[in-house]
Image (cartoon, rainbow, N blue to C red; front, side, top):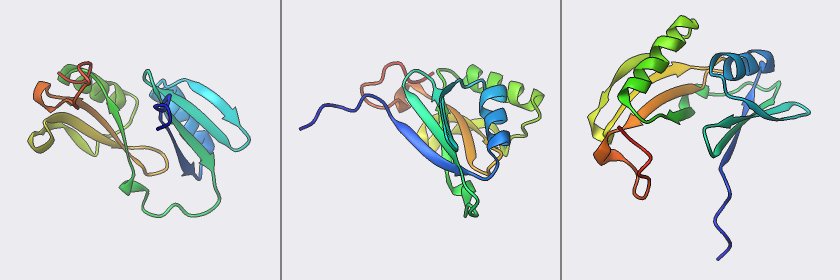
Length: 135
């Protein structure tokens, strides 16, 4: 068996790199970790990365992609919601409990049309072995 991966990295396409960079760097405050020809990679939290690569092709059904940011508490979800509204990012669903998954979450749409979720796990809903998840 090979060693465990070092970290996750997700790549998605965008039709408007300028708006994407503005949203993730200037509104969400995710630092740019790497810039390549036609692609930019953002550092997400301690261990994750999201990359966006420029495309001229139509992006079909971007709303079916959900990019989730996990925070520690319900209050942090509410703080993010307040902040994003102040930055003119309208929630597509206001913060609320989602009992089925034992989370508290809210949804937004990024410039490409991808769904952005801010969520916190309840204590009993945290993934196994991740004591740092949850409220």
